[in-house]
Image (cartoon, rainbow, N blue to C red; front, top):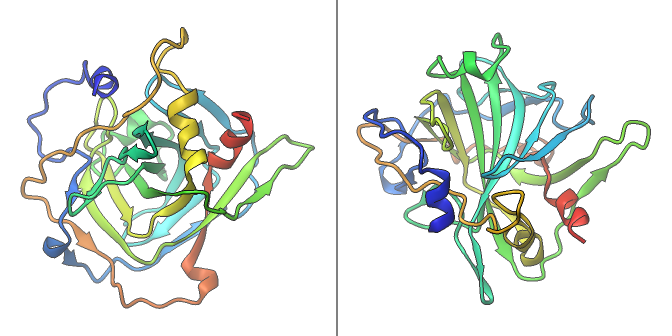
Length: 268
């Protein structure tokens, strides 16, 4: 794709073997006992500061304050949420070409959401990428359902102007591997978690990304296909959580912050 080639034109050739994204082959993954449920702090409360929303030339990025944290889930440290962004494909006729970066048994989804966390103790991303486990990224597939009704909780405190929209997703079933960032400079410093259950969105919500965003300010090229192709797994092992884990519904569902609902309002 022309747009994807623009994104990765200046990425240096890598000789290292821990690049992302990857294709996850389910009959080759290994069960790992310590991949228990995550703990989340501050994910279901309003952000203490305004979100910074920007088109950085290759995606929509939302910067967070770092007050939300994750732990557990087989992670050896706690991590602060610093930003989230999206990858997507192209609207073609009545369907969508897949735009997710990761794939499951060769199957890709319409979009992928990445929530990026930085290990506690690091104050900058530059510090974190020097550590093989400096960053922890939660990856969510986004599946399109035509004319679906998606249930969102929207909080908009008028005194702060803070936006927050929420989608409930089951977080007990996931894959884990060591990899890299998927945008320049693709630092190999990421503990990846890819959740099995996709977020379901309507076709109109997903279409807003490919129709109304551009790679440059002159708006000559729509921002589409902004994903990196899958990379060789090499000798890495992909692990899975224990699918037999059962939790009460209130704990098995995480309120995941997304920008999708807000963007749908802005694009109207």
